[in-house]
Amino acid sequence: MIDKRTLEIVLSEQKEELIRKARTRRCARKEESLVNLDSNMAQVVIGMRRSGKSTLCFNVLHNAGVKYAYVNFDDERFLNLKTDDLDSVLETLYKINDGSFTHLFLDEVQNVDGWHLFVNRLLRQGLRVIVTGSNAKLLSSELATYLTGRHTAIELFPFSFEEYCRYKNVDTTILTTQAEAVRRAAFDDYLRQGGFPELLQGVDKRQYVSQLIDGILARDIRQRHNVRYFAAFERLAYHLMNIAPTVPDSEDLTKIFGFKSLQTTHNYIKYLKQAYLFIGLNKYSPKSRQRVTGEKIYAVDVAIMDNRPDAFCGISLGWRLETIVYVELRRRAKATGYDVYYYKKNTRAKEVDFLLCKGNKVLQMYQVAYDISAEKTRKREFDSLVQASKATRCTELYLITDYERGTVEYDGVAIRIIPAYEWLLGRVD
Image 1 (tube, rainbow, N blue to C red):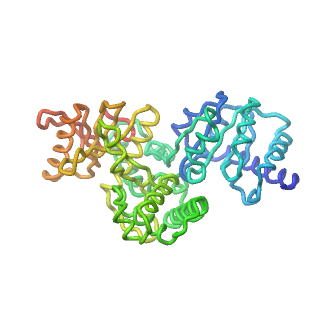
Image 2: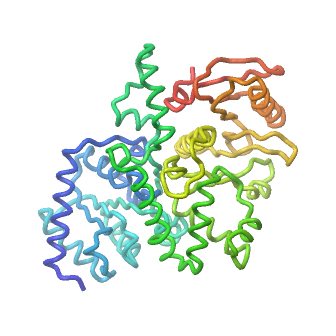
Image 3: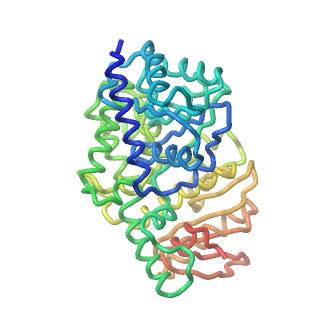
């Protein structure tokens, strides 16, 4: 059992941290609107480490002006905290918060075994609970099991380009030549740097990203899943970061890294996705069974593609742009209840990067190409869109590029060409 005096010191210090945080500059996130402080269900914010989950929850609570208590379980002084200690934690929180609060913010709560029993009890007592967790330790499957019908999961990624601009004080509304040039310059930086909030604060990018990845691989995944062949698993992770976006060939990867079975390879890729180092994209098909084959994986943020040792991605701007567009589509799809797929009917068919769907209906189609100045490139991208359009009967087609814009008629189909920085800011018209 943890000493109550120690508990009071730690929790009081954490409370002071929040007071200081209120005086710092923070960026509002779109996902804040998804947090319902009046709900009798736990609001669970999940995502990769360092994506801003704690700040999002703080913003919501601080802006609402509710009375709340806070505990961060990712504190080394809570390393040996047990389930039996949680009542003492609650008692101490009441003591240092004048005996009452309506909301309880539990940061990285998954570090304590049996946390779900504690949260369920608080919900039954009418307390409003907000929980954050790094998904390598707080899996969606566990939420469904532990908080059955009593939670809302909110997925958070690193900064979008719009949030990046807001943090950097880049105007996103003025339509002057100068303002557009500033936005284009900001997008060039975002394309290379990515959206981890702390990277915008002048830290050493390579050191930051390397430590972040090493921590996820060694502390989160290795410890949680008891990875036996860790050296080979680590090499696999870095290899996938080098070649993403890609459809992993499990048989080939099993041979390259010497794993004993295909299942081991499948498991390792699953762990990397659970940790949000990668996010998956299924292939579109009218048939459900075909949607679960040929999954493509993307890095969760372009920062991990090259800001680390042994990186081979380099300045592959096409891959980086495609990654940014997919993560943004994923954000938008989550908010609207739509689904995102890629299109490739068969091995001979041309591929389209993204389809936005509602059920079996294809609503929008997106092709991504950084530079379409070469006629051969333009024709290839147009042919892919038109072929998929005719197969799916989708007529809303977009080609997202670095800077070109306009509308073209190609083989009887209209294709909108939009600069990425405008599309990311929602400026389609």
